[in-house]
Length: 147
Image (tube, rainbow, N blue to C red):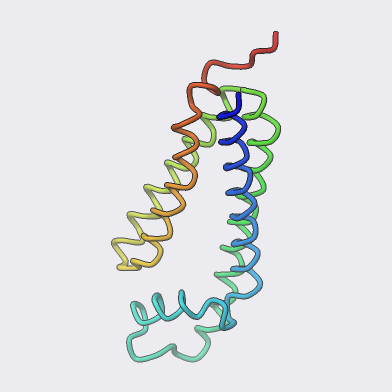
């Protein structure tokens, strides 16, 4: 039970971190906070510099993407808190399947585009979420101890 609580807390913290990252991406994407990402991504698509109008488009795209990430984090948090912690097996399958589909598609597309910073971020997030799912799967897949 102690290990199960540890992994639940891990997933809860990771999901809240995802919410914060998504909000930061949505609200701070064209500020110095996200310069490291912009410096890694922009030259891949605009080697000579960003053309006029692209920065405002990026602000919108990163804003929408950040809102999606924040929403995904909130969804994960609710699944962890209200279903996985009560040992509903569907919650484990929902998280594992959703993370798997996201990772494969996003990472393949990012690699094909040469956006290696996103490939690295995806690998980090995969580890953060799959480690507890793998370690705690035996708790959650056998179902609730309650009748």
